[in-house]
Length: 217
Ligand code: C5P
Image (cartoon, rainbow, N blue to C red; front, side, top):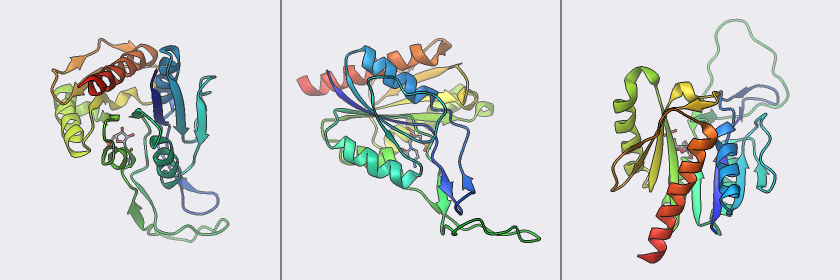
């Protein structure tokens, strides 16, 4: 049995007390991963942004709102985890400043200063030791799967991940999708078009295989 950290859902980056930047992530993939990991007998902590879907019973759930909160929660859980699977759609930027209350609308255009958010999964991978870190790479559909795989492999290398799950951006909010699993040394594993539940089970199995291999090497 492994202890598995999963990040899921979008983050919200508040401009003021009412308005925020976010994205269309439903959290379904992360919750499916949590369910698959529980079904396989693992202990699961789900660090999850604001989502509608119910996390599975049995997972330890840490709700967060912003990327900085998600980073702090993920880093504390990672200390005692064996495997991290990052399925969250972290907002790339946050407003440089957060205003109090709800500032009234002013006439004419306005400028919002954004600063980059930290790359949470890359931060975990940088101190992973024998732990296994798996990321997702959601790529634009128009570029096609071969291009998506090339970009996913680039992320695998740059973020120092053990595996990356490449999928096309029409997967967002949908019940199924096309997934390709890429590892450092192995060949690409293209899954047939699958529901997120079945794809999640394969991702958990792969992460566990990599973790077991690391323990016995
Ligand atoms: O770079 P990109 O956003 O495509 O990378 C996707 C992978 O990195 C996902 O696993 C996602 O959860 C993770 N990520 C992260 N923190 C960020 C951006 C992405 O953990 N700020």
